[in-house]
Length: 88
Image (tube, rainbow, N blue to C red):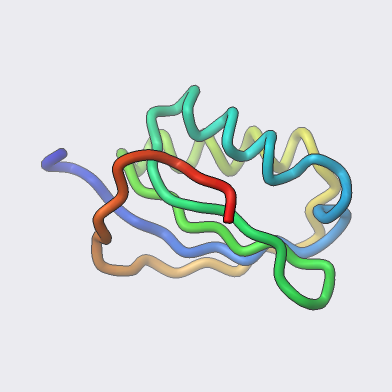
């Protein structure tokens, strides 16, 4: 994918114990993204999304509409090798 980007996110808010990871996986498939998602300490969720930048933006907006996200930290990182989107 020539225009692929990869972003690393940390989501804060009501994002654990509410189906966030499973919904993220469904949305990632819908938007054609690869990467992974997992719960981390402090009631946060860590996520890496790889794909077209416009699809990553739509993915994040869909998650924000679905869940009570209070803060998102993100940074772009070099492309990794992901074949699909998985829950860790």
